[in-house]
Length: 262
Image (cartoon, rainbow, N blue to C red; front, side, top):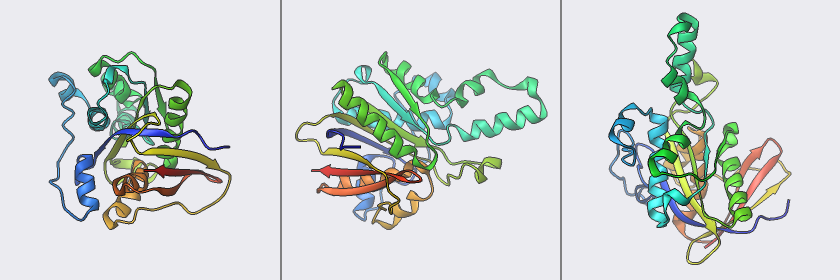
């Protein structure tokens, strides 16, 4: 596949307990320990919705709000791509246990939050967005697959788009099949290439090649603990603000090469 035309990064959002925002992650990458947070605030949700929303929704909505605020664009106008390797694994575990013991007691509300596009629905209602939304799931390659989908949509439409990648830490029996040791999410507002935003240029390559890993020790540890933390290679390069070339796994014999044009 030839290179995809470049897109600009207009805004970035990040949340993990030890780095609950993009400025916090930049500080951590620079060797400064930021103030941690126990849970994402997701203040863009109405108070009642925020109380009812599971962690998976609050996590995705929090980084989405951060990225859109940083972009200066109107949330209601942005199409979205939400990516998650495992969805809400806590609710999936709970539903499986209920089905095994008392199937008539399955909660319709909990079931609604178990679907992969639950966070997208909450976001759309919170910001009054009627634009198109896609949900992507690709296992360990979820971030790379979602980034490629989001970039292609921006190039095709010529319109900015919000891309969100998030997974919560897994518990219970799912730990063995859906391994995520920490909750991590990031969001990028992508737009047709324009200065002064950093630009990304993507290319898929049919090859078995080594992935690019984060250089900073904490980021490298997180990289292995959540599928969406694969984004840290890109986020670290964006924080440096210099031209870079990166490689992420997209499939067993397919890579996503990313060129950052600062």
